[in-house]
Image 1 (cartoon, rainbow, N blue to C red):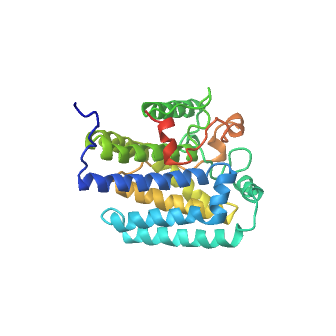
Image 2 (image 1 turned 90 degrees about the vertical axis):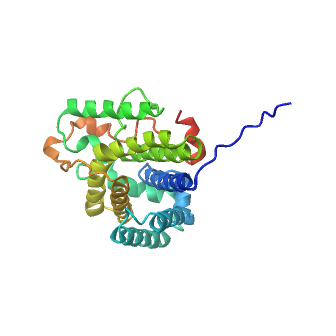
Image 3 (image 1 turned 180 degrees about the vertical axis):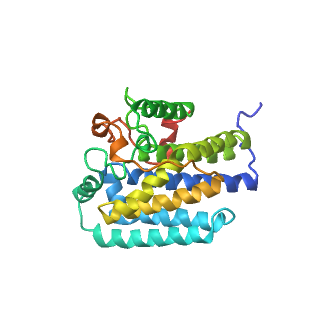
Length: 285
């Protein structure tokens, strides 16, 4: 009788290494995505117990040890410096605090509407016209739909939020790693090309500018350090992907989106972050 047992695809050592790098990168995107969401109890516990920082240190260390070709020593030193400072701040501030403490910080930094100095939505950068903004959101919906992600609400607001764009990169990098381990380099290349395009035209351009503005203008040290970490990581990613993001201008009160866009610019779009890699199957095809 013929065996019905399937044979697992043989994976080369090179593809295994590429898969591991992709999975590690995906987890950094996941952690940063969670850091820019309105705080929830599970994430706050990871801060208070130290697991958030431990994961960051482990993942960044892996990249710096195993990916020295694209990542410069300066980038590595900057990453270590920011994570060390963030670890010290968290260990001093958070152990005896409740969730409301971080919620107050979030509101202080980002407010209930879009902050004009460092809005966490990409549509506020490099454009002053609502039509252009609407087209931008429609383009993002196209990106997400192409990889099996469906927006939780009927409207497009929130698709350009930094947390959601980081989560999208999490999905792309996770799919890349999965492809290298199960489907081969051809399908992995599809994910890599999407990462390059999204980094060049989207998160690598406005996201890097947002991170820099938050780091220098933010009203709370925890979030300024998170901004600094995002800036360093996006710099590492543009080097790794070998792309040069398009340049965008900083937002200005005179050409920002209208007031209605400011009010609805928060994360009110039904978006929930993927909590761990086991949930990816619910979001991707």
